Length: 443
Image 1: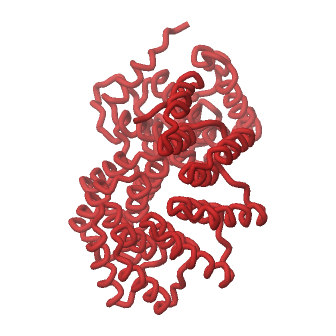
Image 2: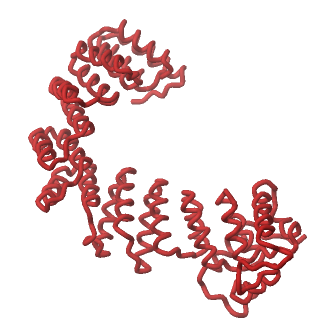
């Protein structure tokens, strides 16, 4: 049996023979030219003038059966590469059309990639671009980002614009934002400008991963590529959010005012981001202005808008003002969720308004919302702050019994409360217990 090249040999071969490069006519490596393709099909009994026309000895149904058998073998048989040709001596697997049929019936795209690499190695051929296209597209559709990236890097294959745009989206969805930005650079190098939809997709994923540095890099490339003429409200909304994430709320607000003057509504997400930013800066005049602007633009504040307002007020020790807005929301028909209840309970406990916090606790439970570990810790903190350690411990035990378990946050809440009231021995005992229970102790 012939010795087959190792995977590293395959990679080296692909590097030396990228798709689309010209081969030396004196080389022994055989390209799948029209003539060689015709010979392959003649060997199988095909008429090269009609792909679907088969010899009596090998009809279409039998051909598909063979493809499915090969698919099964590559899924179930170890080291099938060493025996596949001998198992099917009358089949020329090097025909590109066999691979495409194989890809159509193989339910694992990574196995299809392995089969493709084996074909290149065993038949000593360079990859044809049609097969590269269909395989690359299958990898992207399967969200196999690493495999798709490896495929491009090691074959020299350059997908068309549509495939590259889908590849960028695939990378962004997989969290490979830096790699996606590199693809934009590659597109620029070959004179291809992606659609605004693709630019926006990349900008959004930069925001999701906290990489505003990459977002601004992309924005600079957008300006250089001349795509700014196609910039839409979605793009502007992402830029406003990026300014806010970078702590430059005033710049985000300037851009916001500019697009309002052009009659464009940036959408609730941009409004909410600005409201959150101005709440952090305690600029409640701007917050009020933004809320009124939303209503004037028929972009009614939603539950998330008010969540930002209430959260900002509570963080600035204005829990009672937050509670007023919270109750007003309920009267107007809004249904606060567990996050908003937890935010409100925490804000009231920070102010020492334990009575109001407990009312919200029981109100939330009566509405069918089960407190989570954050809600428990908020109320435990309230009890500890007022020195009600017996009730705090009861609530702490209830939280653990519900399966939430002891965490660094919950232990820190108890330790801080005990220390605040001078019960340092109990606090130190709990601190030592954290190590024995495998709970991480932080600064």
